[in-house]
Image (cartoon, rainbow, N blue to C red; front, side, top):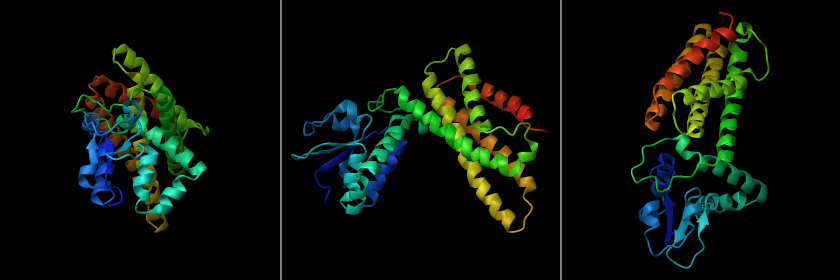
Length: 276
């Protein structure tokens, strides 16, 4: 195997990290023992690497005299052992820059995307980086603006009180501000983490609505009447978002009243923007 003597030090408390490193093993990109939890890697005398950097950029180390690779370079190296063209394209400067930026957004916010209860004292927990958290929130807001806006335009255009560009993005930001006020009232800690969770819940809802839009368009093109499904689907998506918000708040140990205020905001805002 071309990756023999290499070890990928992953965050065992990150479900995303567990999934993709296990995928590498399952499909033969790595040997089974080459997938090593971060906390074991820092205790192994064979390896010398930047522990702080490895918390945010997964490290590929070797028990031989080989350079340590971090982040997207680790992943490109592993994929390149089987598909050389992937590594070549990935290292083309403009593409490599975009891949690095995408990797950083995901890595710095991985515990926001998939929150977990740590089993090893969060030894590989990335520290808060406000810049990358803000970038992540803005990306989620942009996704919400595009997909929810497309759904509103397709099915609720005549029911909107205002035909204002950016309405959905504005609602996204207003909800974060609304929740911030009650976050302070309830004396909770780490609003940056919670703001990320609000963004993820909105992005999940936007993605589901985007898929629903495709499905409803297919049904409509087949000659079926989807008018009832248009509103029903939107209501179901709100229900999914409510349950997901409650789940994430519970996992973070925050007060359940944040879910109540999240729901109150939704109940209050829709009569203001829709003609019922």
